[in-house]
Image 1 (cartoon, rainbow, N blue to C red):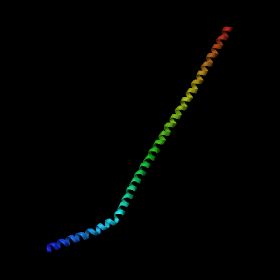
Image 2 (image 1 turned 120 degrees about the horizontal axis):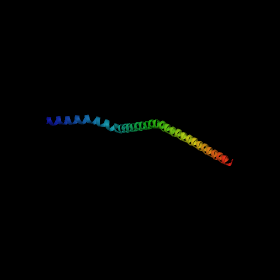
Image 3 (image 1 turned 180 degrees about the vertical axis):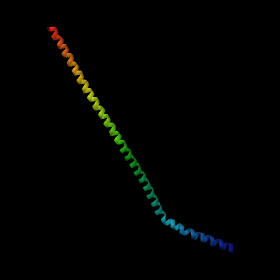
Image 4 (image 1 turned 60 degrees about the vertical axis):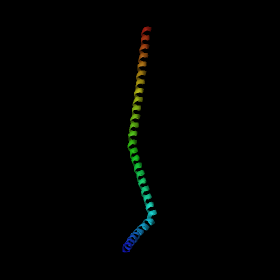
Length: 111
């Protein structure tokens, strides 16, 4: 009988110890879920912000490089256009010289 009484006491004391802890978690479970959800949202937001800032940094680095490349291409185009103009002028000068020489030769022959 004493053994049974001590077992009952032990079981009752264990149940009484568990009960407040269980009530504590039962009452806070929605709060814990809410806080966990908010924490996950905050982590996702931080990751998104980090990605965006990395993309912005990459664009800031890439943009000047593209602008520099574009500027170089523009300068090369201008140089090529200048060379073409100079070549046209030289060609016109040579044509004029040839015409002048032909005219001079005709004048010499006519005399």
